[in-house]
Each structure stands twice: as structure tokens, then as C-alpha cells.
Image (cartoon, rainbow, N blue to C red; front, side, top):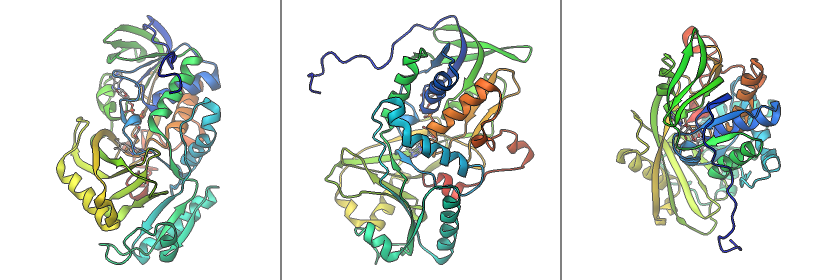
Amino acid sequence: GLTGNRGWAHHWRDPAPKAEYGIVIIGGGGHGLSTAYYLAREYGLTNIAVLEKGYIGGGNVGRNTTIVRANYFLQGNSEFYSHSLKLWEGLEADLNYNVMHSQRGLINLFHSDGQRDAFARRGNAMINQGDDAVLLDREGVRKHLPYLDFDNTRFPIYGGLLHPRGGTARHDAVAWGYARGADQRGVDIIQNCEVTGIDIENGTVKGVQTTRGAIRAKKVGIVVAGRSGQVAAMAGMRLPIESHVLQAFVTEGLKPAIDHVVSFGMGHFYISQSDKGGLVFGGDLDFYASYAQRGNLPMVEHVMEAGMTLMPMIGKAKVLRSWGGIMDMTPDGSPIIDKTGVDGLYLNCGWCYGGFKAVPASGNCFAHLMATGRFHGAAAGFRLDRFRTGRRLLDEEGTGAQHN
Ligand code: FAD
């Protein structure tokens, strides 16, 4: 920077853990940090610790492909993601932090008459929810994305659903902004502190065991994304969650070429260009359960093939890096924000591969639940018991998750 990298202040303190807190949040990802932030900002609760086993930004919050959108169809999801997008739109002012939220527009391509009908319906649902959607025909897509292969691609392009308020945000800035905001309000953010046990007496949570000692707490929130199954098991719970790897890729920095987020669901491929110029893209899960934060070559090949058929120009770009993150997959592709059978123990998980866009609303709604004991209206559908009863499943896999 202009200071020659001298005199930069730490974004947040590095406190030693206290023996006791009012609230302990396990997991310093986007959802854990935003929960702590809203607990402090909206409910004045500041005797809080966020316990992170690694470093802030090292989990999925810093590994995702940064897409932010509100184009869900089903009631239950639709109002939640709409709430989240509105929070995104005020986030930089709220945090006084540049998270580089860029509403550059998201285009979901379709490739058949049936898919066109489905997207038209989805667009109408989005508009009814108060969000925005424009159905584009083939020529409409060509106007926005002239570089696509309209003639020889594996799945001919019939059109696309444009979501103008969709876009991207700088993922680790979101983590840092929430961490700083929470810290400024008195929340202790404690890195390198792994939770190894959850203390429960007579059905009530009493605290946690960590690699830095025991910490007592009146309330504990589990917000650990891909590790949800393992941490919930410390409280004797077996969750309807499987952890899977999702990979992503980035090329060398290029001049501006792609100024939207483009989603090619039929080919399991999506792409945008980062502000630094890298083409950021990815595809589907590796499709085997794993806790490894890296994927395997068959999916690399599949994603590259899909990119090449959609926009052959991408073949000239050099891939710089690929990486993976651990996704907490639920059977219906929708998340869980709920109390548990243990008094004072709360659960926030199941974000699958679409939880970055949810960071503001998830923290906002989870904080509401932890502070008041009542479910926030926008997240009322995310109850854990839907998997036991089979009622009110929110199965939106086709668009909810697959398109990130
Ligand atoms: P994390 O950042 O993983 O936070 C969980 C934290 O818990 C971790 O830091 C972990 O170290 C910590 N933890 C685990 N166990 C313990 C323990 N025992 N004690 C203490 N701490 C613990 N979503 C979108 O909306 N748009 C996208 O474009 C998108 N693309 C993606 C692309 C990829 C490649 C990946 C991997 C994910 C993508 N996602 C996307 C999904 C999104 O990143 C996740 O759903 C979301 O980040 C998960 O929530 P989180 O940020 O809280 O998770």
C-alpha cells in the first residue's frame, strides 16, 4: 500500500480464551462470524467467543467462487435468499468495509423448451418475491455474452434467465469484514482453537472442551460447515449430512473479458472473472464423501471439457490453481438453522455448495434464534425435523445448489 506495508493495524485482537462466555460459536467461517456480528449489533450481546480451529478465512468462506444471488424458486428458500441479498446490498456501509460486492448480473443458460418453461416460472417466482429476473432468448443472450459458442456447443443455447442483481463479492473480505465488525463490538475471535468436546449435563449444554482448555458457556452454536457431522457427534447427534468435496479453478489474470456470472447447468459449469482478472470457474461435486480439502482429476477433466464446449476461447487461458472445500450436503440441498434436543445448543449447517450468498441472512437469522429462542420468519423452513418427518422438504437441488 501507500504506507509501504508499514503501520498496518490488526483487523481484530488476538485474545486468549476466557474461562467462560455467555455464547460460544464453534467455527469462524462466514456463518459463524456473521452470527457473532449480528448477536452483538442487533441484540447487544457481546460476551461471545468465536472458536476457530484454523485461521479466519481458511475454510469454505475463503474457498468459494463468490457468487451471490437470490434466484431460488421454492417458498422457504426464496424469502431467505431475498433477505440475504438485501443485507448484501447494505453490507459495505454496515461493516464500513469494502467487500467488493459487484452486482454484475448472473445469466443461467437454458437448452431446451422444457428448461425455458422452468426458467420462466422461476423468473416469475423471483419477481413475485420482489427480486428481479429477465427471460432472454438466444439473441438476447448473444447480446450479453457474444463469446459463447452458439453454433457447435454440445448443448445448443436456447436462451437464459438474467438476474441483474446477482453477482459476486470478494470472499475473504467478507470474512475479514464480519470478523472486524464483531471484534469492534467486543466479541473474542480465537483462532487455532479446535473444539474437541461438548459438555452437556442433564440435557443442558455447559460449555466446550478445546485444544486451549475448557470453556464454559450458557449457549453454544455449531457452525462448522463441512465438519458439522463430526462436531454434532460430540453432542451425541447424528445429522442428515454427508461431507463432499467441491473443486474450483482460477486462471492467470486477463484483461476484462467476462463481465457477468455465467451458469451452464446442463454442462455442470459456471464462470465469472475476478476483479484481479482471473477466470474463476467450477462444476459439480467430486461425488464421494471426503474430508479432504482437495479433489481429483476426473472432475478437473469434466469441468475443462464443459468450459471448452461453452466458450472455446477459454482454451487459451492458463489455469493457475485449483482447490477444494468440504461441503455439508443435506438430502434436500437446503440448510438447517435450528435448536437441538440439548438445551442451549444450536445448529447451523447444511449449506451444501451455495452457502456463501447466505452468509448475511444465515448469521442474521441464527443470531435471532440464539438471542430470542424464536425462529426468524425468513428461515422458518430450515428445521431439522423435516428429514425425520419428510414434511416440508425444500428440494431445490437443480438450481439451489448446482449453480452455486
Ligand atoms: P467455513 O468457512 O468452512 O467455516 C467453518 C469453520 O469451522 C472452518 O473455518 C473450520 O476450520 C471451522 N471448524 C471446523 N471444525 C471445528 C472445530 N472442531 N473447532 C473449531 N472450528 C472448527 N457458495 C455460494 O453461495 N456461492 C458460490 O459461488 C460458492 N462456490 C463455492 C465453491 C467452492 C469450491 C466451495 C468449496 C464452496 C462454494 N460455496 C459457494 C459454498 C460456500 O462457500 C459454503 O457453503 C459456506 O462458505 C459455508 O459456510 P462457512 O463460510 O461458515 O464455512
